[in-house]
Length: 195
Image (tube, rainbow, N blue to C red; front, side, top):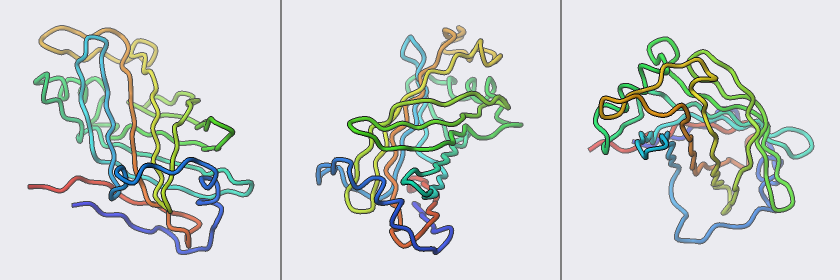
C-alpha cells in the first residue's frame, strides 16, 4: 500500500517554484509516488528497496531541504541469495535501521545539486552529488548516485555467493514524489503494494 501524508499545511509556492525551471517529464513516466534505491557491488551483486520516507521543506531563496530515509530491512536481493541479509549485517541494521540522505537541493542551469550528509551504520559523511530533476505539475522525479567506500566507513564487507565483495558499493536512487503546492513542508512514506 502506498501512503503519502502531508506533514504541515502552510502555504509555499517556493517548493514547486524551485522545480519550475526544470524540464517536464514525458507523460508516460508520470505515476503515483514510488522509489527505487539500489546498492550494487562491482561484480554486479545488488539489493534494491522500494520503500522510503521523505520530507521536503521549502527555504527562502528557492532551495529545498530534503531528507530521504530508506529502511535497511526493505533491501532485497533476488539475483544473489543472501546478499541482502549480509548487507544488513554489515550496515548494523539492528542498531542503525536506516540509510539517510539529507541536505539542500538547489536547481541550477542544466545541473542541480544536493549538498549535505548521508548516514549509514552510525557513520555520517558529506553528501555532494549532482541530481537529475524533472517535474510534471507537483510531481518531482529525482535521480542520483553515490559511491559508498565500505573500508573508509569502517564496515565489514558483505558477502555474495560466500565471498566478500569489493570495498565499494554504488548507491543509486530514483524517486518520484508529489509536493503539495499548498504546503511549506511536504512529506510521506512510499511502500509498495503487498500481494
